[in-house]
Image (cartoon, rainbow, N blue to C red; front, side, top):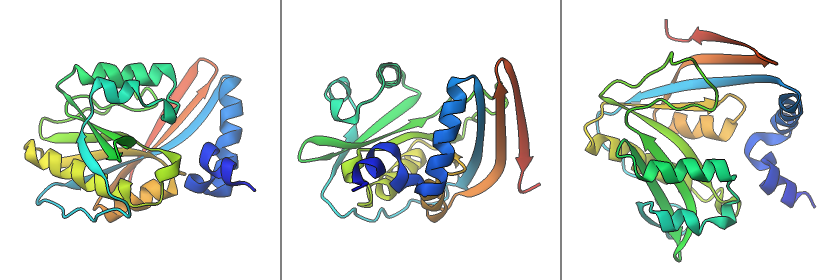
Length: 212
């Protein structure tokens, strides 16, 4: 009965409690009030991982423009799609896609120079030359829960090793429990919490370091 809600609105990803919390925040955001909590996680890249094959057959390769232009089944907002397309022309980004029977089912990115985040952190975090950022991992709702994310996570970490990086970083929303568990399994450990608050034009950011 509620399957369409679970897939379309993130109940299966966040759980009912966090889903309704996110829905409430979304309403407040439209009114100019925004509260967010994020976790910065890091892991050392000392040896390659052996990716566990997902439950379905996939083919992994670098993304190209045609892949994005034919990804209407993801329903990406135009501004997000434009960001993805712009990255294709920037060598400091690596875009990877998982394909099933020629159909894009999952895409993800690596940033090698810029620390991107969904909120403006005032440039407080930057990437060192031996670090890489995992960002914008998106699975089509019909292909979630099949182990593709865990597999692609390992693929991205191995790609960073191939590029000579020594550490990987990822930023996750605190209430995204599946992503937190997935990154923990991949060897990531939380380094700090970020509390972001915006009330109309006034923005405040509070940091809590966990290992200091």
